[in-house]
Amino acid sequence: MSYFLRDILRQPEELRFTIDYLNGTGRSSLDIAVVAVRSARHVYLTGIGSSWHAGLNVSALFQLAARPVYLVDAAEMVQFVAIPPESVIIVISRSGRSAEIVQLLTKARESRATVIGISNVADGNLAREAQIPLVIPVALDHAISVNTYTTLALAAGILATSVIESLDSSRVTGSFDTPLAESLSRSFAAAASAIPGWQAQIENSPWLAPQSVTYFLARGSSLGSAYEARLMWEEGVKSPATAMGAASFRHGPQEIVGKDVRFGLWIDAAKMREQDLALARDLRKLGGNVMLIGQRLPNDAADLVFNLPEIPAPWQFLIDIIPAQLVAERLARLSESDPDKFNLSKFVVEDESGLL
Image (cartoon, rainbow, N blue to C red):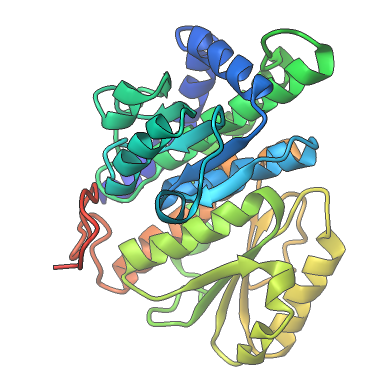
């Protein structure tokens, strides 16, 4: 068994742990973060790599609740953003030691901004230097970000929801309400039970073909899942892929559709379902091979269909990445690639120059 697969299999339990942790030991830090975000005129949400994809997921929670945030890649923020004084910057980073994150901490300090650091490592620069550290102490993944990706996305999502609830109820601090926490925990347990069935679907599926051209398409909070899948193909399968919004794909990129092109399409539980199922049908008619991930999907709607357990639609991103992770791990083995080894990348990128 690869380390990548081991990390995938422990993911539902780490997600349940994160909820318990933020309702217990980590609660005081969460409450302080809620007050800071609630009172800020300008709120930035940033990260790089997998952490940026977590930001893509979570930004949808803020936007859907009419609480807009500026979503900016950390490297771009360092070089191309003038930060207004007294802003709040929510920084997501598994290690907190990446070069861009370290530079951003300095820039935030000089700009008199407050940093909320959401990380998995207590002794990283982010956790040590952020005015409000929010450290989720799960075991780090062997190589590809799996648990660190989803637990940080969950923590940032809980922060977003707590801010929104505090504004709606006029409470000073927010509350990640018990019914939602219990609902998500049930969904995580159901996802764990679904994994063996998903693995059986994957084992001999013709959708998995080494050296294929692969496009990942999604909307809303699942857009981060599409981008994270693209990164897993690059890091684990060692194969190029691309990701974009399902709507954007229909504005020019559809010209690449043809025989043997692979498509991974996430179906939102509430919005644009029929339109995206129609997109899947047309892709297949044009010769494409389609993988669908979502809730309550017809089993014959694509070449490979993963039906997710029930989960509130804006939070689907927490489990809809799991089938894609399993596919990436299996495809890496079929491609004779090692998903547990980076050939050029470092576990933590601590410089900004070149590749070698």
